[in-house]
Amino acid sequence: MTVDTGPGPAPTSAVRSAFTDAWTSLRSVFANPSLRRIQLALAGSMIGDWAYSTAVVVWAYGAGGAKLIGAWGAIRLVLMAVTSPVAAGLADRLPRKTVLVGADIARAVLVAVATVMLVAGSPTLAILVVATLVSLVGCLFRPAQMAWLPSLTEEPAELTAANGAASTIESLAFFLGPAIGALLVSVTNVETVFVLNAVTYLWSALLILGIRPRRATAAETGDDGEEAGGGMWSEMAGGFVHIARNRELVMVAVLTSTQTLVAGATIVLGVVFAVDILRTGPEGVGVIDSAFGVGAIVGGFVAITRAARNRIAGDLAVGTALWSLPLLLVVAFPSPATVFAAVVLLGLGNPLVDVNFATIVQRLTPDAVLGRVFGAFEGLLIGTMALGSAVTPLLISGFGLRWALVVLALVVGVPALLFLPRCLRLDATLRPPEGADLLRTVPIFAPMSPSALEALARGAVRRQVPAGTTVVREGEESDLFYVIDTGRVTVTQEGRHLREEGPGDFFGEIGLLQDVRRTATITALEDTGLFAISREDFLDAVRGTEESMTVANDVVVRRLGRA
Image 1 (tube, rainbow, N blue to C red):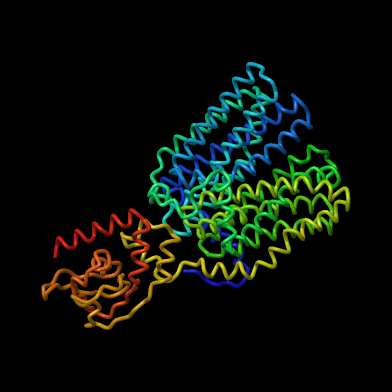
Image 2 (image 1 turned 135 degrees about the vertical axis):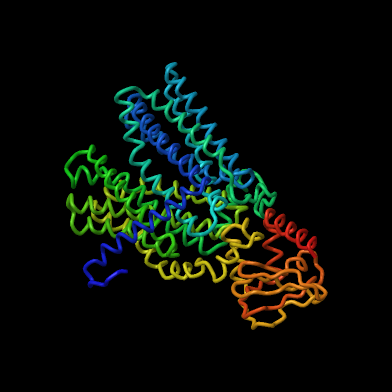
């Protein structure tokens, strides 16, 4: 029993509730064996990636100085921006498990080759080419991983929590990876870090090999989607075309690309803040990055906590706005305190963008094109990040630091404010409709993706029938599929009692699947609540998922055998 003692304890209670929600969501993610494996694979791979990137930068600086690092970084980002939309097409054409394992093994081999080249004293350019190939093959991994997540989850809240866990892992990897890389380079050598990274890729591949998805993807069932096909440019355009056709995905693209443009700008701003405001010199960037990492870790927990509140589009807009307001804070009060406060807020907003962006795309996009859509977003976001990094020095030299911050704040803040009402309306459509939880318990519908099941629930009509009502009469035309929400019914055939059914049970599938008239009479034994699904919606949903069709046919065979 709780006693209301006034407003004082409310914040403590709210914080405790938030941590409880976050812990519950994380526990549900890691209780799912498939989700646990994909998250641990991501953690190992990304920590190794960041350690490896740090080692490459250290080695490249020794080989050619800052100019070599800058040139390589720019070329690498451009190539990744172009490669991501093309490579991600494989995530829609092949089983995503195969794509992920293949990407891991290919990267492990390439890193091993780079290690041998280092030991052999190969030319700098050749080693950088191999290092770039590692990044380009990596363009396959994240889109395929995000596209596969819906097949590993049971409900939308679990999907959001899984995205939140992945974002938190990314933040931790950003925090730990460079530290591990720098430490190992200082006490051992660059080759040791390379070997460590190869091991993390193999670790990731082994974990992914053990994953057993809850439902097959479109590529595994042979449904490649109407947008599949064509050459390289067709594959590259496929994701962009699908985004352009969906106004909600266009909105998401605008919000996320403006955020990553500012994220690219912060690469330059971090150095400027350290030199001009913190007065620490360039080495202060490490402290700023750490503050960002702390904010990102907290933001990850916030995003997970809010997973069950169905405010994913609204939170996306809020997260985007958090990349605007902190910059204005520094404009108004430039000081070390406001710089650290701003960086922590930027970090806090980052997972709100990442988690909710991924969840919205997964909820709005058919599985058949999901890999290409994520690849298109990946290319777009890498491109805008590179643009932000390139343009910011020009803004600072042309207008000064304060006006440069104002311009960047407006670029990301104005779309966030303008799109907020539309984001809130989108949340209303993404909220699970009445009956979705009930339909999820029906074996025929269990293999379906959350988005397909929710679409089915939106088309269902709830009916309340009094006791004694004949819901379905033997010999009538078959036009509806029914799921019992409350009450009980009796099933008879030619006057012979067959069985009774209650909440969670269903009837009507035989006539729809075999295109025959009703084979039995269903009568309500008590006041009964039902969800009725039309013939067209039922058949489209079941035939669109191979496992659902298999389960449905098994049910028909079993029931006809008992008749």
